[in-house]
Figure 1 (spheres, one colour):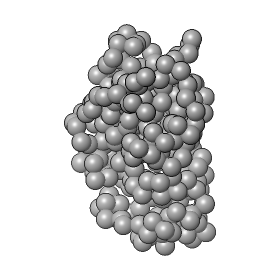
Figure 2 (cartoon, helix red, strand yellow):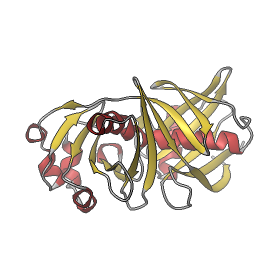
Figure 3 (spheres, helix red, strand yellow):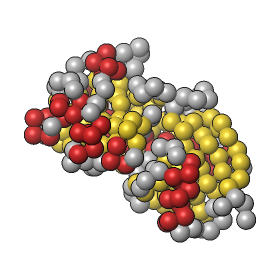
Figure 4 (tube, one colour):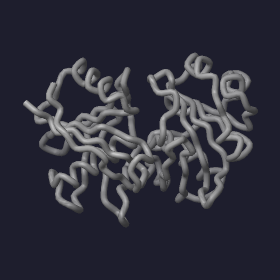
Length: 263
């Protein structure tokens, strides 16, 4: 039996930018060990596995080493594939049952908009967390959101120059570290995300990190609708809109590979 397999660059409208995700379209759910093996074979930040149910799709996300609770770019890629292959009609809401509850995606104003939970950040001193030592730069503000630490740096130039000690980052009490600064080049804020704990030294564009960045920068800037740029080597733009305890994440996607999984 062959399984349709796609590779989609998410949060970009250009191939070889944004964050690549593999999307496997399953007829029926598969065993966890098999999905983890496929994700290791794909060796991308995330591989998404979709299987149909009466009210939508089951959606699970795996890095090359672990299953994760929430992933923005692979959800955006999954919705894009469903519409592109006509498994969902254009204009139909994509609904996903996940480890983070029900998530949805819609087509709006030429973008794909995800409905995700907001993950606010509670302040914690950087000195207690060891962030400055791990990042190699001073930290102006720091805090903890669900699973992640967030560190605000002096400016965008400082953020782009950061070369973290990944061994130290991997020992911090979190699943990953978000660094951020006020934006430049027309963006409201910039960010990067390091998660060696999940087998990814630096993730190219991280939707789930923007679930924390959106409420943080909305509070700082006094606006609910913002545009962020994740300043990784590949780079990608994420538009965010804070809506109560939810965050709307919007971006483009482009397919770079279509094939069949034979294993």
